[in-house]
Length: 260
Image 1 (cartoon, rainbow, N blue to C red):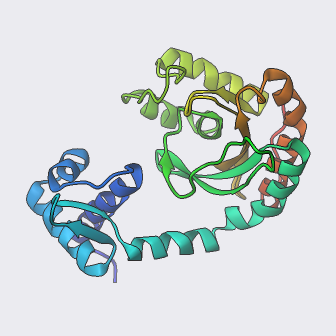
Image 2: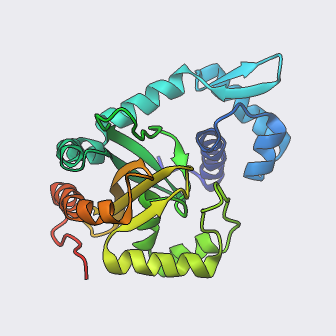
């Protein structure tokens, strides 16, 4: 049976509340949820109570705050297990890590953001690792910006019209500067970043496309910024492009991106 518009709205509100926990790294209270989602405290409280009953959230009486529960962890783990992008990228990540000596990652696109789905860590003593399953912004770091660079102009402008959080002193938050960075990334087919999302980290990323030609994620190489120099990124570009194109082809894309 097709849902009514009221049912659809209720489901959307509930989904937005749950997704808000994926955007934060700390427990949240009713007021914070209501403020960030734009729904009333009464509605937010009802939704939160239902999620607690289902095990998707836990409630801390001492702080009157909520955090993700065991059922949410089960869903997250299952989502990683069945992700076609993660599955198709695994072998390419292993080979990319071997070719570069640095950590190789695959990122999936989310509405207005992205999430790391998998990584093959560097074998070097000092290395970079990423947090799987956590939502990150698109404007900061190479993995996100290369995805943003391949979205439509309307989608890009929608993001640029909103306040962009500064994560480090190197994060690009000026809309004009970001537009220029997006243009360079799209023209070159790869994106580079140094210290934009995390101090002391450097990375280079290439886009992954689905069967319909739309960008669905990215593959990256990341490491300490003192190793991820311009010269090192130059050396890694061919292996990175090959890995991203290989994953795209495995997902049904038949016109892999190449540098212009």
